Image (cartoon, rainbow over all chains, first blue to last red):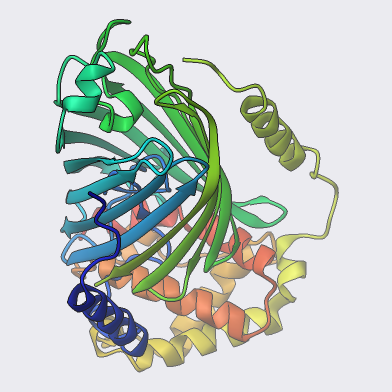
Length: 286
Length: 143
């Protein structure tokens, strides 16, 4: 029932991609935006932190460039293991498109839950570094679960749904002990249960607006540490859910490779209390 | 939708920490190392520009010595040093050059690398870049 490790070939290709990215760092392939301004891959595929999308667009492509990223992320929680494979593209620093496949292994309950998320994000205006109001973007995420049996058994109305969000990000130069401070705020309209893995809607209501926020301090131009908070709906009477939060550290080796580590506190998930654990994510960008 | 207790207080604590740090300290110009450092930074940056064929074309009709002096004066002025930049405003100085964000970002990277290379501490690098960032709008206005 469980599909654990990716096939050897996939792993070999991924290794090759990372190695070549490390070797060719600084080549003309990279986008020209400043290191770190594309964030990392959030668990839903969009450029952001770990848990929440940011307004910045993926990779470091500028207005006359295109960029692409691929990422592999995993979270080890008390009773679950989440794996996310994601890819995204940036067209002229105006449009971001992303796709993510999430698999949640139910280590304690048995079985797995999976969903596919196709996302789009459009930069409305601004720039995270140079514009006095920062950068503002709107995004949409279409999510569909692979098998809606468990979600519907828990009371979810639907096996697929759409999130829409408005996001703003801005860097404040030298704001914390001379280090740059990145602030992000996202307002999301959603009826997703546990981000969609437990379906959409439920006996406790439907779509609602939720707030997400994060901050990060660039200890060096390559290394950002911070925290995230993501408010969530709580629509399933049979499986109460909590807001998500994380403490994270992301290191940008260069414009092609970043490694993110985090500590997650995701609250109750599908009847199992207080899920906490570690998170790691590797992104390659071109 | 149960709110966790500690996220908001922690955020507040973090932000007040920044505010409490404001004390009287020497000007940014002094902390950067004054005119000798700024002149070295400009020269270092211009060597990097000279090695980049896509950026150096914008300096084809520029007297480099004159530019270096004017840019050092501008950095001195913007960091509260004893200088008065009296060159052309940024929008006029860059008008119709065809500069895009990619070119702009490249020069920002060369300046940041030059600051690092000349031993300017990260806090002062960030503060100087923060004061220069608003110039983006003027420089890109008439492209």
